[in-house]
Image 1 (cartoon, rainbow over the protein chains, first blue to last red):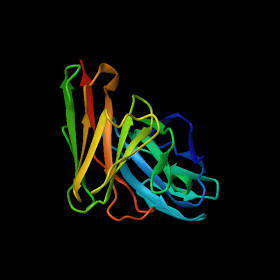
Image 2 (image 1 turned 180 degrees about the horizontal axis):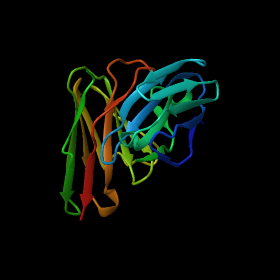
Image 3 (image 1 turned 120 degrees about the vertical axis):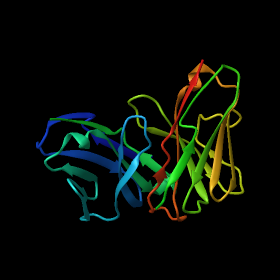
Length: 111
Length: 117
């Protein structure tokens, strides 16, 4: 069974304090690993897709990396507006064209 | 690009009534749309996969007679919660992808907050 696990569940950061979020996955025949940002009361907003181990993608203060077993979302010098829940999801294998989501990491950045 | 619009954004209904939620892809065609449910501080739970012109595929444990899905066109899918009860109160989110490939990103609507009184 495909599984995606995120850690930590919650993260409190001071503004400017860099950190990393972890996403471990067991998805057979992974076709893509996705990162989303979700603000309260909103739908998830697409951030990145990673397709193969070693791949990296960046967007402003966010950088996503992928290995054969896990993905990391690095937040560099975060600002309060980076506060959100970050979700990762895997596509492929037994889930077919569906995404298997992790539980998310709630990030709070304090000024 | 790749905008998904969901309507209404919130709805309050009385127990026993039915509620319809619309999901539209505004600038692309979507042969497949997905409906999710999300409880507070929890992740997204896939309810069903909606396929244009055919029957939806429901996940295990999701009552297809309670959650009716219609995907009549390449830009519109609807979810109808029939005979709603307070336990159906939740945040419902739809999503779609522009191309029918496994590895293109899903784009999500902004969700519908359903409260059943």
